[in-house]
Length: 332
Image 1 (cartoon, rainbow, N blue to C red):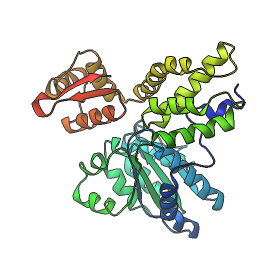
Image 2: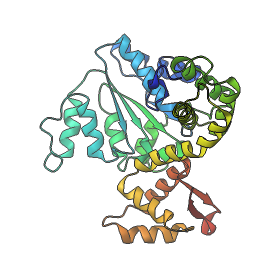
Image 3: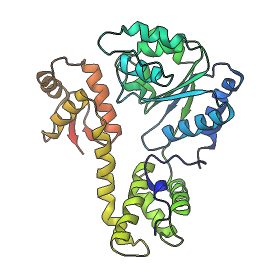
Image 4: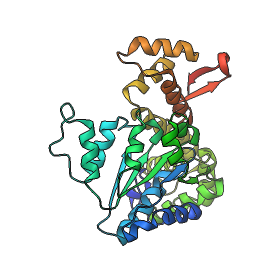
């Protein structure tokens, strides 16, 4: 049933993308000055999870590198590399400039200066950029000659609210590209391409793709995971086609797999917050923050913990009910 398993994997980046023509065109135009050895425009991609923000950033920059082979592009997941040191280290890693850098002894400002010594065009993709614990690094990068920033986050507020006026004023001029949730028809089209590229003809029907897309509720990652698991389960059972019953059976498991991937990417502090919620039937924000402070040696601010919570809600790790003093968090 499976001809090419790669296209069913979450990390697969398609050569052509569908239903994102406006987003691709806008980002390409913002980065176009790089082809003339100039800095592109700072660009901010935002929208809910699973709508193609990271995919589009990778597709457009890969096309750009095909035009400008000497161009350096570096992707940084700020959920994982959330400190100033880690972010700058990743960027220098893209330039092969980390051989003599030591976490404990190398001054942070030296990393910035070393980055500024590289004056050629450098496109930097900062995914989950609102997770940076020190937003000053954005100001430093914005002022670095040759660097073009592509920033990715779920919501505008989570990036701009914590910024000081100096940095906010600079970033507010960025090109903003909003990604809305996929409709059922759009997600069916995305899944249909994966079926065309990776599966034998007739393995999955159009009606079953609609069934999967409807269950995914606009999240392409969930839809692709349901498709992959349904096909693999059908093969294990010796079937030549996928059945409706198998799709229904794997939907909860696929949702759980996507959720677990997100849990595994949590930082140490975020995982403490998540575990407190998981250990409780429900918990109020003040109670949650008190419990968090007791469990860590160097607690983050209440504002940062609120940021963690908002991110976990967006990634369907926790749910929130009520407002103000009545607000409560529960694990999904």
